[in-house]
Image (cartoon, rainbow, N blue to C red; front, side, top):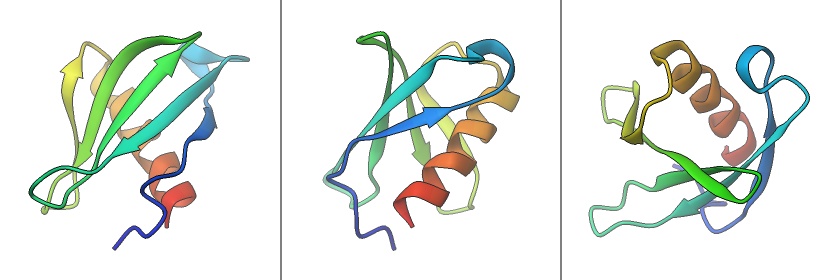
Length: 80
C-alpha cells in the first residue's frame, strides 16, 4: 500500500526525457487506487495507474509502453 499518495515528486529518466524532470502528482480515486499525473515542463503528458495485476497502465497519454513501465518503477520506488 502506498502511504505517500499526496506527495508530489520528481522523476528523472534516461532516453526520451534525458536531462529533464517529470513531475508526478498522485491523485486518490474512489476505488482507492491512485492515478499518477505526469507533467513535463508544467504540461500534463500522461496519467498512470498501477493495476491489481501489478502492471502499470496508461490511463491517458501516448507514451511508449516501455516508458510507462519505467516511470511506474520509479513511482513505486518513490511512493513506497
